[in-house]
Amino acid sequence: MYRCVNCGAGMRFDIASQQLHCDYCDASMAVADHPDERVASEEDMFDVTVFCCPQCGGELMSTENAATDFCSYCGASVILEGRIGKEKSPDLVIPFLKTKEECQEIYKKKIHSAIFLPKEFKDPDHIDKIRGIYLPYWVYDVKQQGDVSLTGTRETSKYTEYLKMDCHIDNDYDGVTRDASSAFDDRISDFIAPFNTKSMRPFTPAYLAGFFADISDVSGDVYNESVKNETNKRTEKQIDSQYPGASINYPPDESAAFGTEITSMKSAMFPVWFLSWRRDDRVAYAVINGETGKICTDLPVDKKKYYLGSVLLAIPIFLLLSFLPTIRATTLVTVSSILSVGTMLIYAVNSRTVYRREEHLDDLGYQAKLAEEREGEAGSAPVPVEHAEAKKKVKSDAVKEIVPSVIVTIIALLVRFLIKPVSDIPYYACAIAVLLCSCYVFTVLIKKYNVFATRPLPEFHNRKGGENYE
Image 1 (cartoon, helix red, strand yellow):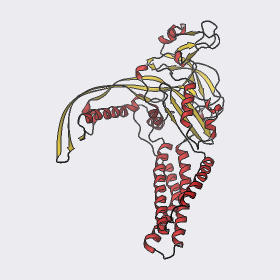
Image 2 (cartoon, one colour):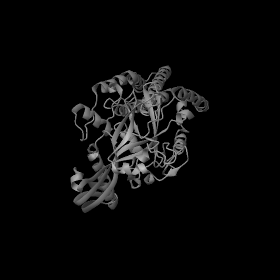
Image 3 (cartoon, helix red, strand yellow):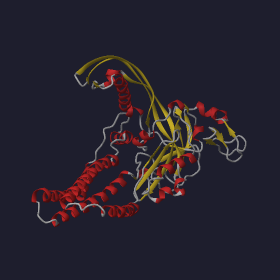
Image 4 (cartoon, one colour):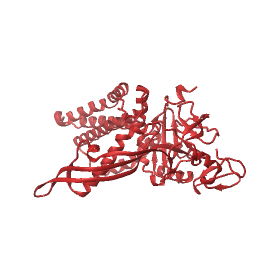
């Protein structure tokens, strides 16, 4: 804790002034001027209080020792248990530039038009729980240099132009970032990016005063290939811009062809504002870039609000349709079948997306921790693990939820195009059955969306809490 030189109270880092500030005597001073700063800058470790959630095992560290009464990861309203420890100092830090009040307004603006959002999301007490957290990152500098020969084609209205390109590449990509916490979803990290790495400063614990910080637990080597691939794609865009309209054949191993090398990898802490919402066994996050204000938020749907809104919307639609010419029975079957097929396709796409998210298949940091637990080794890019039980459950859900709709839709199409009864009654019966099935599938889609828009409660068994907490 950074003590005030005037009254001895704890000081915090003030975002507006970018200085240390004492709330008791109103004293302020530059970070570099504090007496403790000279000691901190000479050491590779710094003192922290590590707060651990007894429910999920999530850990946050702070230079303060005041108890915290809720967990940002699982949303549990519990007193987090603290222990004193030391942490390795990162190399760099970007201080908070967006205040809590500014980010609350950003959040309110984001959810303003979400009319089906659960009411708790707009509760002032909930919004006040937004918390400033420094997240660990890796910062890479990448160099590309070498000669490469490429081929390609360019189509014109009269002929095909064959291209041969000899390029000399000399690129420096500095400040490519990846989050270093398995607790932080890589997709959220990508969404709130970029951070302006030119704003980075040498790290000192003073910037943490009044905030929390997550713990780095993912090796920087995990992202080596991902970083190289990103810079290779940037180089592709540069080359493409020199040959507009051309289809260029790039080599399979672009890193070797472009001479792509990571020349530097440094640890850093970047600022985010973090807000969590919990209902039963699901949690939703709102994450705001503490430097730029870019927001990523989960927006689940309140089913009661959705059904009420659907009914209110159906009334004017029904009144409008009542003034239109009568729709033929055969046309009604065709339209309802098309609607049914559309809802089933949306179901299939969303089921796959939900499955990949629930299994963290696109989160390299999370997969790295799983690989480390399985093999006891860290430092290499993991192969995503697909759980057989999860895949089996997805297929079982599909059978229960959409197969009846598939059968009813097929019967309706057979009646429409093969049987072709003379009476309109079979057509109307098929149309009603198909529409009822579509309504059911659409209800299931809302459930699927809420799974996609929330997350399972985290369990950090590899950390000190959760099942392993003593």
